[in-house]
Length: 269
Length: 250
Image (tube, rainbow over all chains, first blue to last red; front, side, top):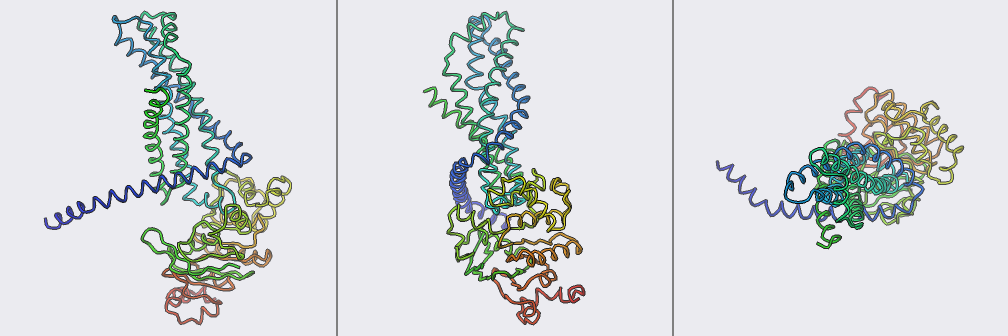
């Protein structure tokens, strides 16, 4: 019992130390991430190196992610439409379903769901690839050959993400709206004219821009965070696992945080 | 000429290098020995600027590595070939592309004809067949990966070659092949070499001079003869098991 009490007391005393270490650790990550991003911006100068790799990477992540993005956005669109129909049946005109489906998909579900899916898919892939390269000294090897790991490994991945994630978001928006339209017609007496009237009534072109701008920010956060986590990997296979999990969790949290901030700024709400 | 003076490095609370003084003169091959985890690879990485010292200086060709700007460091690295412990080959590229990355002169790097010839020449220097050029690292054995790592390191025609445990994990036959290769490259390419190893037998065969790193310090630097004659307790302790080994005595 005495031993347990001592252990408990030492744990209690350690709490400020633990918090202090966490804060220092967080601050050090922010500093290193800033330096990493600066290094990446410097790497942009070597277009000849990163452009061909960026195209290959864009093709890989675009084609590889297309099916899952379209599948999930279809279901999101269909469920949004069905729930809207269920909640508003008999109370308000049917064309409102069109308004709600388009707004929900374009403003929120399309960009956020796509980003969260890709944080898992692309984020995990980037962190695992670069983490493995770190622990097998491939990144050190590149540096030792006088070549910039940033322009060879980071910039192509970030540029590919910045091209493909907004593109996939646009496709997800279109698919989600079409799936919502189709599914609401199956269960409610909504005509095409009702749906398009509702969709057009409250539509603002800015909404589409807002969706794409958000997806750019999400793309930047997924790719930069994942590459950073991969580059910071330590301690073999366990370290690669930690980096991969860390990349997915950090970029998902950042997506939700950015979603709130961008909504406040871009929609002035 | 490589000179390390009072180099200190710690990772967290662990002191790895505690005031290391180490010299390598032009044209010689120095074997840096020491037990596993004593900081040999960390020291080697200081020479090429992959790790910066907490204190002390690392000077290569009269340039202090830690103070070099990005371009100056890249320029310095173009004269240094680094052979990594497990090859560190880029697994998404075939052997030819791996070796091509070692060509540090940008004009030669872009010249397809030169690249073709240089890749085959480097493969020949490490006793590998031309067909290996088209293979991927995953298709190679451990010994072949190390040799491709050496081929990549020499592709840029370096002045210095740094070997990080080139024989670790290899059977004695393959280890001997790598040792002979290190000797031959020093002879034919006139490179200055630093070989990190805990293989005492190989170190005595290959090196002009030896250095023993233990407890964060270089406890002795000297010729193989001087090491044999040394009464330093750390040197004796480190060498004892291999002196008793018949293959070493031979």
